[in-house]
Amino acid sequence: MRRIAPSTLAFLLPILPALAGTPVSDGKSAPAPEGRSRWSITAGASVRQITADFRLQTPDPGLFRRGGPVVYDDGEVGPDGFKKNGLPFFDDGTALGTVNDRSQLSPTPRLDGPIPFPLSELKFHAFVADDLHSDDEVTPGGFVQLRYTAAEWAGADVNLLFGYSWTPADLSSGLRSLSGSSQRYRYDHTVLATNIDLPGARFPFEDDFSGTIHDARKYNNFYGAGAIPPREDHAGGSSSYALGRAQLNVDLHEIVIAPEIQFRVTDRCHVGVSVGPTLNILDTDLRARVTTHQRGQSRAVRSFRLNESSTEFRVGVAAQVSFTLDITSRFFLEAASGYRYVPKIDIGADFAHAAVDASSWQTQLGFGLRL
Image (cartoon, rainbow, N blue to C red; front, side, top):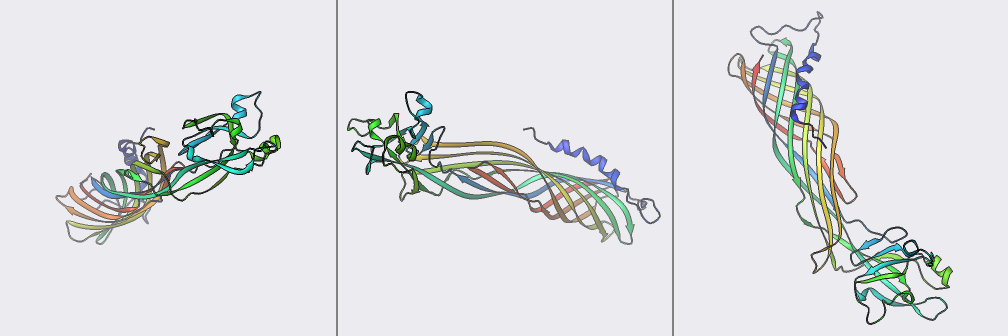
């Protein structure tokens, strides 16, 4: 995604003054105060805060129904055996899969069809995490501002401000051990179709003969068996854990148009108060990775990655107070402080989100010139 550079937005400022021909009661623009230009420009540095609330998750894989495999922390179920092998295999409600450890297999009292042989049960697990973390950065940026004096009263000027500011921020969740819990997924299994129950079976065991029952109704209709549907419940302990990290780069571009009343405190000092709308353009790049691991193993058993860029537009409000000190009749220093309100934006995918809050106090310090 091509970012919107500060120089690209700054070109708007020279044409904005054309909108500032504010009429007075006689139908003409107010005359410039004697000895002073109607226009001035200020440029300098600004400081404001940007906050991001990160949410990292490991999605619940759920139960296998159809299609591609469902991956758990200790194995997988799928694809559908009939879909993969075709004839002479039947669409009997069974699936292929992989089982990591013999302890995941246990007998049941249910019978596998007219042959008095027990069905087994396969147990899979997945660590389901949901973790929240906030990060904020008080970051410097830059600004440029045009001021147009529309009218003059005794001791005060009525101005229009046309401003642009740019603020970058780099935010991160850091590498986090995600909080969550372990879910258990149980399937009936026909050992008649495999040799998983034999003492010589090696694990991880790859079931190439479609023995995991994902559609009990269909399987029972075929074989007269007593299988029950797959089920999901909460497991107590967990042999898995999850890690996650998210990084967010933000470029905030702000355009403001605001009326200002500027009071002449002395011949050289001026205090201004302004309130007006802002157009905020937020360029964001979010990169995230979430992984689950078996304890004692460094290799990830499930991994989720995200790299997403976006540009969002939000209308906000800016209110500020400025202090201007004249150095000469043309040059001056200006300091300003105020609050910027910007509606939050949400970006991300189902396992990694960021809520970006650019509302903040902002302070500016710049050098000005009367044109």
